[in-house]
Image (cartoon, rainbow, N blue to C red; front, side):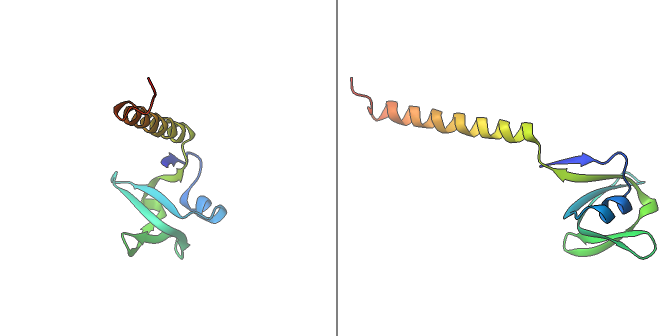
Length: 102
């Protein structure tokens, strides 16, 4: 999974319209915070769990919001890479154990 920056959405819009498990917020100082179970709190703040501790971040302190998404290209690449490794290991095992009749 990769992070996808939500260009046209604020944290309030995203959390209100989608049921997100995790979001990554970039703050005005450039730091990034990953929040699990994000929700909107009173006073336009985002509340979520950060490393097991409840954290609150003011929406005015957020410059960018990112959500996790499956990357089709990376998934296909991983599958092809693993398949190649398995076939290669099988060929090497077969050649070293004389599994082919000569």
